[in-house]
Image (cartoon, each protein chain N blue to C red):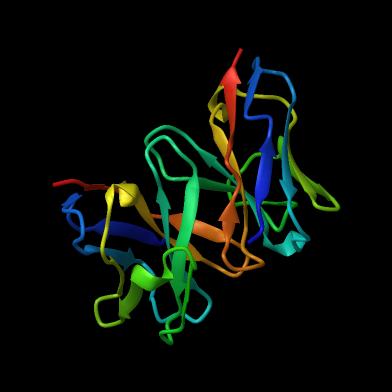
Amino acid sequence: EIVLTQSPGTLSLSPGERATLSCRASQSVSSSYLAWYQQKPGQAPRLVIYGAYSRATGIPDRFSGSESGTEFTLTISRLEPEDFAVYYCYQDGNSPYTFGQGTKLEIK
Amino acid sequence: QVQLQESGPGLVKPSQTLSLTCTVSSGSIRNGAYYWNWIRQHPGKGLEWIGYIFFTGTTQYNPSLKSRLTISLDTSKNQFSLKLSSVTAADTAVYYCARWSGSSIDYWGQGTLVTVSS
């Protein structure tokens, strides 16, 4: 099973700042099968990035994804109030498909 | 735009079978471009992939649940279902149905809380 380890567990930032969220895989994951989800309280997750780099429909261009080896990164260039949420990375290249434990992005 | 809606009992007794159905709207479950998934989230915790079914009936299950799990589909009703047997309190969670579209899971139901308690 591929374990996805997200860091930090909690990230406290102010609107307008840059957020960098990390997801490290325990073994190789094809970038085609790495996604990022945003979840707000009481809501289902929402797809933000798929294929490690591609923004989902309706996601603003301040969100971007990147990859370096087994580490994947979600960057939010300039935080808006609606971006504060929990973010999960997810891989479905190898079964069982797995999620990271989440990074909580909170307002400082 | 496609919509998914979970339905089923919100309370299940220990050792019984948890049964949920997902109804898919505005899109056919027989579309070979999609896989139909179940995912759960324990209260205050992260997400766990349970399994999926393809329109042919092909399934893939999480090994941690495989011995207790059945996912099936009813194409006439555009629905797919989850059955998890011999439940315990550890199966208390919000259960989501979701669609995988070839790139990732793109549409989710709103989720339904299932509590296992006597």
